Amino acid sequence: MAVTVGLDTSPLAALNTGTEEVLDGLLHGLYEVGQPVVPLAHPRQALDMGAPSLGLTPTARPSHRAKWRWETAGLGRAAGAAGVDVVHVPYLAHPPRPLPVPTVVTVHDLIPYLYPGYQQRWRTRWYFRRLAARLPYASRLVAVSEATWHDIALVFPAWHARVVVIPNGVHPQYFLPPDAAELQSARQELGLREGEDRDTPVLLYAGGYQPHKNVPLLLKAVQAAREAMPHLRLLLAGAAGQLDEAAAPGATLLPRVPRERLAALYALATVVVCPSRYEGFGLPAAQGLAAGTPVVASDIPAHREVLGEAACLLPVDDPAAWAEALTALLQDPARRRELAAAGRERAGAFRWERAARQYQALYHGEAP
Image (cartoon, rainbow, N blue to C red; front, side, top):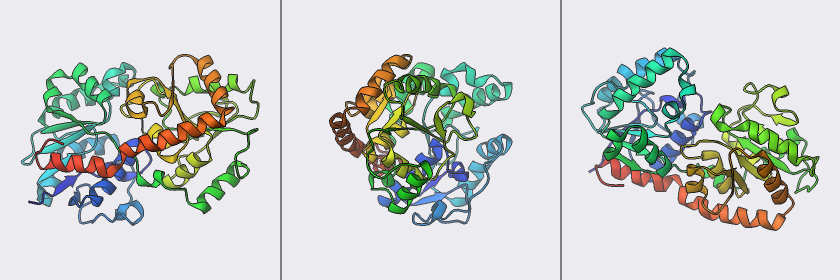
């Protein structure tokens, strides 16, 4: 019997964060496995996987108040009007009461509860206290990694019996060779010559710039590594408007870029760097694996789980170790080829079709 899922697509407003990237990939996976999906935040619109923005009308990112109203009342009303069999909220949220149909909530991480610094404003503390009271109404919670599963057990042990682990996937576009025109455009914009140039190795960081992302460690490590490799370049995707150029000397600050350009940047990079102190999954690291670019990442539970032996893992508080490891790797083409091959093989476990089948089983009330 077919089960129709009402998927909260409200995070697709801007398509420039990890949550939106995951939701987009999940939609592609569900489409591939034939799962009927109704986009609850986009009434009277049908999903079209081949169209820009999935065929949905782009909207501005909602205000905090509008987001709260949607989570409190709008989502439940939309689900009722759509007549769906299951509601899936692919981020940390839930209406303030049980819905008439089962609900699935995806938990990417517990950063707001593990890092008190993220709750300095009283409104933020108020929001996350109420959110914690609402989540027990969910029928099932999905942790995107074993690392997040253990965090839930630590912070909210009462939820633990309802948590299953379904790892995130990587969007299929990162597994493919980048578009030739996009690659050439990115190369010209960055002033890079075609082919590998040992005198100009390129490091790529793609991610956020919150404190737990640990970007200052990366900047210190690159500065030290330039003593041996003065032409080393560091690309900070999404940093424009987030970092001051004075805070990132010698780095190239790029704006947020669409997936096509990011895929080209992964292909142009010599090494992908992921220095986070904490991740629920580590999507940029997994994308680097899929793109066939060697990955150097922090030695944290999520990275150990996702990357395994297919990446170089380093301490989160030792810029000297990062500088030494990066210099050695950038000067060792054979080792980079080994990591690239291992990364592509490892990334095969993180295809969205596999995750979508597990979600599909969960929608049917089965063990994924």
